[in-house]
Length: 486
Figure 1 (tube, rainbow, N blue to C red):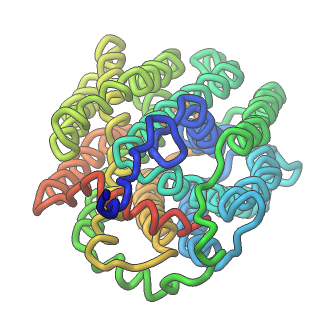
Figure 2: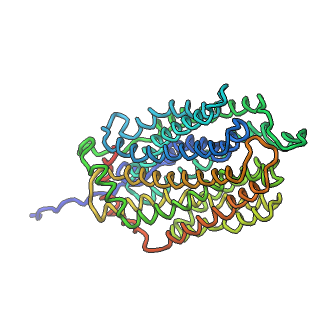
Figure 3: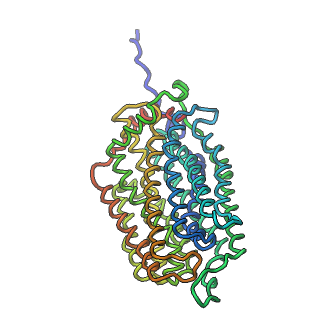
């Protein structure tokens, strides 16, 4: 007779089957679209909010510094709070993450819209914009934290996660391009060399009703992207879950998990390095338009330079994803330093041909600086899980604390930089600024981002990088983390 049969080996799932970890193009696309609204709004804010506050709302530079610093700190403070609340929330029919994104969408759209509204009173405008910017940043955090943590729940396959991250970053860069383009084209009539042609002496220019109307229209258009893209995210992406596991709240506590994650060396190195790199990018973006308007004769080329930066970043994102896969993530980080000599060149030689070359190279560097940390974070999470074998609740801690620290560094960099303008004697609404202001703007778009990028890259290159787990291990991690936020 026949001997007893051994256990039948499991048939490996074919690509695209539920257990294979393969993500369809449609799912990756919808996932990427979910990140577009925050990038559209952040792009418009990064390039134009400071100019709007100084030259349209005409509030003093010291108050502008308070607005920017307060907003960034509010967003940073909301990150651990968002991680804590999401970590303790229970799963619903839509998952644990999706209700947070959908619930915050209408409120963040309204906050963004009124951020560009010019109130009839003048004495409390600084307080008005500080309150709205703080509210917007906090709500953006409660959208971004669950959205980015969703990466770990798409698939247990590291390559598929990297691919989904590339889709997300490409579409987010497209959103960044769309935000700066739409906002910039609409408000372009409010700025330009024609604004001061009739003024003989330096001084304030009255706020044009046309300028306030243009900013009002631009704000409404950008705010509409929130409900549209959130709906597409909800329809196209479902959170992975394991029915055999508890619904929620059975993993490591938030504070205990935070204590463990900040002591994990690969995570600590990643966070500290991108504290400097992300702050450098924020300073470069925030002061480019002011530099072109007040420290050079490039005010008529502002829109063209912004578009060049963003088109370069969008088109180069797939290339950087290939570089990540082919040469490794540490080697691809060297692409960030490409903008260093060109930023200094723009400050020294602010000519039109030089400006466009600088804009193109800056776009290449910004693309990799945005793609790299989000591609490295899942590897850090996997590395931590393999070492510590903890259960649910850690993805939101890793993602929210990373965003917290980078926002805090950006708040400090922007706040100090804007205060330096105030000390240099920046006059809100003036057609021409003093020589001290011109020199300060050159330092802010040249020396400051250069030094921060070099420091960040030196930290990133020191020490070993986390190893990507083998496919067998990634499946084990997938079974364990599938219910982490589900």
